Amino acid sequence: MFYRVSVYLAGMFINFLGVALVINASLGAGFWTAFFAGLSNNLGGTIGLWYAIFQFLIIFINARLMKQAPEFRALFTVVLESIILDFWVEIVFATLDLSTAPLFMQLAVLTTGVILVGLGVAVYILPLFPRAPVDQLFLAVSHRFGLSLRLGQTIVAGIMAILALLIGGPVGIGTLALTLFLGPVTQFFYVRAYPLYYKYSPEGHPVPAESFV
Image 1 (tube, rainbow, N blue to C red):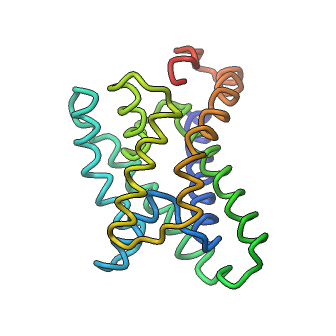
Image 2 (cartoon, rainbow, N blue to C red):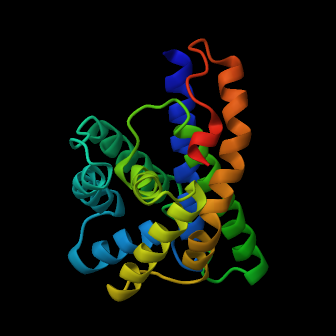
């Protein structure tokens, strides 16, 4: 259990470090973050708060797509991720401002953020704990419509990017980068992390990696 929890938390922190870097690159937030930032700007509250509220609603969307009961166990994940998100955005990088930095520096931070988000997602879904509803959503879409992990992620990203734009969220190059590349980056890291994870796991090797590709 310690092994699984450690990998799970490491993936979460990596993921949201990447999210924070994308935000601070000042070239447009990621598709989910842009949407939640738009809600925050219009209605108040932190990005993490809206992240939690919206994910509660997605629990029921996922249940519908998967044709199963709502996974209320994911509520713990929702709260934990919301806290980690606000930790990076509101505390660690609260005073960081790259809006006037050279473009090459902004692009470097953005690229690093995209890579870390994909790596974080790929890592923290490995222990098979209840996933955050937003991450379960692209898996549910992939399962429901027989799509690859990459295509399911890209479709969800595209829809959320459009919604973020409609409500005035910080949509830009960063949003486009995550919309186009997060699915492929996540899949790239997942298929490589999977055998490493189960190589050292004391709990065996339950399913082939191809089940998620």
